[in-house]
Length: 254
Image (tube, rainbow, N blue to C red; front, side, top):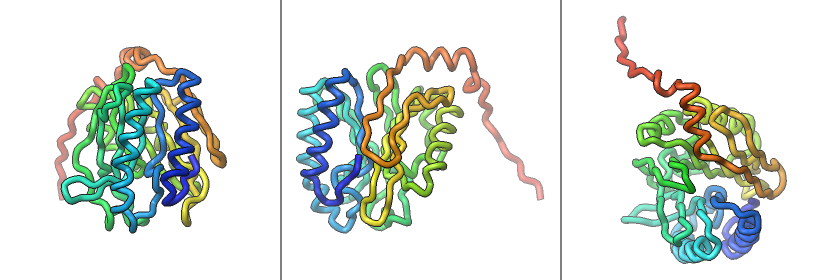
C-alpha cells in the first residue's frame, strides 16, 4: 500500500478496495502496513489517535461484514501514553490482539513520540497461533524466540521498511522463518511517504524459508498464499531442531 501521509480518508478508501479484493478471493486474513492510516506524521499523533479510534471501530464492522481477520498498526493512545499498536480484528468484529511495538526506531524519532511496549502478544488466527510484530522488531531475534515459549507457529509482521535496506528485509524474514520453523506473513508499504521511500516486497515465507508469495517493490499489490496450518507441525516433526534447543549458561573467564 502507498500510504498518503495525514490523509486518513484516502488511505481508508484504498483499504476498502483491498478488502473487496480479499473477499472476492475468499481470503481469511488480510494485513495492512505499519501506521497505514496516517503514515509517520508523528507530530500530529494526538489527532490521529482520536481518528484511529473511529477507524478501528469501522474496521471491526468491515471484518464482520466480510468474514475477515484484519490486521495493521495504528497510532493509539492508552493510559496517558502513545503507542505504535498492531491491532488485530477477528471476523466476529472484535479486537482480539493489541501489540505495542517494543523496539522503537530512533532515526524516525519513534522513541521521542511513542512509549515502547513490553509484552509480546499471541493470538489465534484461522487455525494458526500467531505472534504479532512490527517493522524494526524484525532485527531482534530474541523477541521471536520468546514467542516460541507460547507455542507460536506463525509470525505476522507489518512494516514501513525502506527501499535501501530491502535486502535486509528478505534476509531477516527468511531467517526468522527458518530458525523458528514458523510461517512468516509480512506486509510492507510501498512508494514514498515524506522523505522515505518504502521498499514494498511484502512476502509470505514458509517455515522452511521458501518464499510462497512476493509483492512488488514499486507498486501497490495484493499478495496472497494458501496455508495449511497442519503443514507447520509436520515440518517441525520431520526436522525437530526446536526440540534440540539448549539453555546456555555462560562462564566468562578473564
